[in-house]
Image 1 (cartoon, protein in one colour):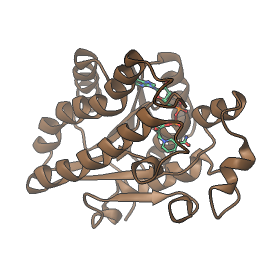
Image 2: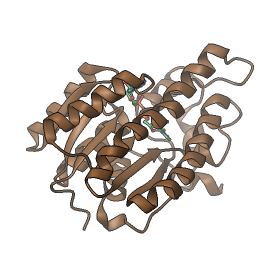
Image 3: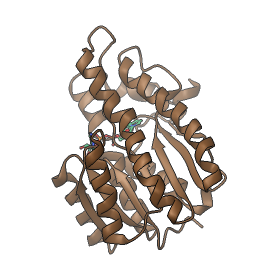
Image 4: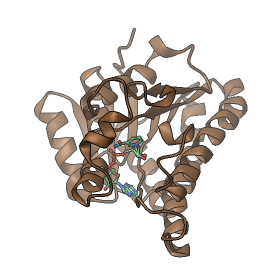
Length: 252
Ligand SMILES: NC(=O)c1ccc[n+]([C@@H]2O[C@H](COP(=O)([O-])OP(=O)(O)OC[C@H]3O[C@@H](n4cnc5c(N)ncnc54)[C@H](O)[C@@H]3O)[C@@H](O)[C@H]2O)c1
């Protein structure tokens, strides 16, 4: 039931981390995947991995904060695969900065990618999903949608709160059109975002682990498996909710 054969999925930020792992997990369930990333070389690498494993993939350069690039992305997906069933709004950035240390420009850029990007991508795919008779939009939120991150990530936490609120509203608006909207809320996951925070000494790996009950950071592949399940028909009863996969971080 978590089979995705015949489905076409767009994964934004698919060139790295959770996006790359999710693109691979969706492809391994039979989906053709459009790997979209602002970094085309990274998107190409993800698409190559999928093809090497026998899957179908198309790499597209797209900055999710730019409407014309997002529209071109959807056109490219439809031109190549002829249909569209799934959007994983995964692209996101963070700065590891307190409110005082965050500049206005950084705040605007973060919201342009983390929140407006999801708005633009969702808006662009809705007509194609409707033509197909429905579809799924999975938004990447975070544990930060529900709890602070030690007061050192104000813009990011605010953006992920907005993603969760937007997810609920989109779910209500799109359910009558058979478009299922939900969010995935990962905890700390071993991707370049987390590695960068640890490398810059913002937080140690031990401190990250101490925030959870599992004493380990998630691997991108296990979060990718959850994303692939959530966009599948097997998960059709998950609507408008945020599925938290965080090793227990939200309850500590
Ligand atoms: N890693 C974690 O611990 C963690 C935890 C919770 C939520 N998340 C969320 O998961 C998502 C993916 O994070 P990750 O850890 O895999 O990050 P990452 O930095 O490893 O990968 C993000 C990818 O997005 C791409 N990207 C950045 N800006 C873009 C833009 N404007 N347009 C298109 N692509 C862009 C990057 O090139 C990169 O390939 C983000 O939304 C992040 O907030 C991550």
